Length: 370
Ligand code: 0YR
Ligand code: MG
Image (cartoon, rainbow, N blue to C red):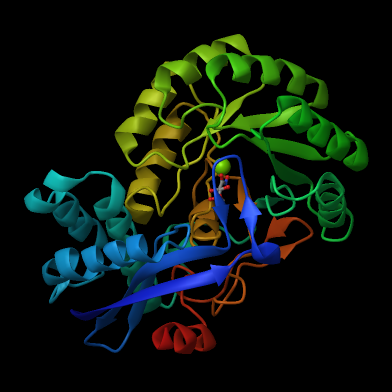
């Protein structure tokens, strides 16, 4: 099997209620700049990054995929994905300008498309190729009820609906708003509405200073929170280490870390408890697996961030022993040929061959017109 063509794709999917916010970002669409990799056998592999749908930057990512990585991929056998990854990752001119940022996001999308091709070639869903089991219980927690721009009443009723009607047993709430007092009021209201048995995660998206984080975390202890995510700047290793030594609520992070070596440093320093790698921030499934193995060595749970809107992550989580919980955000649901399925708060192992990011025909038609 040989790669014959790379086709750029930029997909912008509207988010819930036309716009969401966390402490740091506001967006109306989720961006999925990526690639369709064609082969001489007619099979197409799809891989996407995950962005805040900023068209000029999305174009840089797809240009990097097609112009920088494309020539290195033509004629290669996509089934040799790990060897290809090493070759691309170590390519001197490209790695000179970035083992992070745009080149790295581009490599992630390429890697996902290659694994997609390999799995499709074997006629297997990726989780099966990776050795996973359909009987594994992979729980979903839902992030889509807890945005910072939802008024308190909306957030409470959304979270209640997710729990009472959809069967989730865990939800994530955004914090890090202008007032910590208001953050605490919102968390308290959801805790009261959901009762003691539902797990609540919080995510400050890096907004707090260290003293603010210490102070707010002390108060959050009253509400039995599973974790505080990115309490301070996402790559502040020593700050997170000091925070972890000071507060009792566990720390989750990793959605903005680009490299295995960064995860190693955070894990070794004791600065992270819930490890949150992302296949679209790391250079794809290949590097995700390295990080998940690393976390597993330290007996830390891996709870990925879903920059792919959980389509690929469900596959790696059904296969990797460090994963038993995965975020759910539904924004690509109407764009994928086989959207992730959740039943009573648990993922259903997908049957479709591939890595899970094949756009629906309708989506492809719309994208190609754009
Ligand atoms: C929206 N998940 C996150 C989204 C999300 C951000 O701004 O990008 O909230 O990545 O922190 O845990
Ligand atoms: Mg987060």
